Image 1 (cartoon, one colour):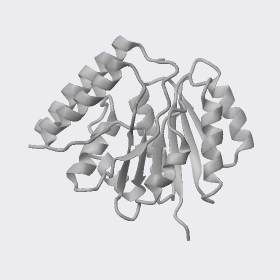
Image 2 (cartoon, rainbow, N blue to C red; image 1 turned 90 degrees about the horizontal axis):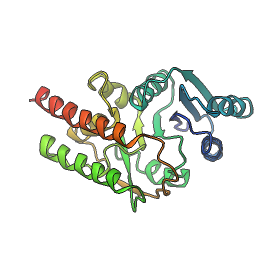
Image 3 (cartoon, helix red, strand yellow; image 1 turned 30 degrees about the horizontal axis):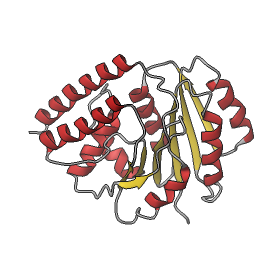
Length: 233
């Protein structure tokens, strides 16, 4: 029996991109019979929810869960919990903003026999300077605290074996700002080859998140990582 996967997609106010994103992933899914897409709509206030409902009527491989707005981190975690209840061998996570094209997926998929936890690495990121600086600082901070250099620890383009994700998800502290970063650290500490496979990254056409809110969340994330490091000593 062929291995299958489920694509977990958190989405918030992505009406401009969500249809193109889902249709492109649905096309890829067609090459992997039995695989599916799960979108968690994080209380979108635009037309995202209605668009997803319409798509789910047309695409048998698509499931949609609507919930109140709680933020990206909690939305990803809910998606993972739902995916863990499935029978798929693999869980793949990407975002609903269309910045990452499915054409890069097979570069990770072909490495699945060598690792249970495989990361993409956004190359030539055409994003605001403050986002690039934050990403670099997070990698440096992780190296200082944990002795592991991870090129793109929060990348929303990751392939994880379901059984392994179930194991390490229990070790992620509750309520953290960016759970994907903690998962990357845990997988690296467990000795998995993260591969850091280069992927194309489309320019950010809009920055829907408030800059100061993002910086506040980043500061929270730095503190959470420090506390996590202390808890592991």
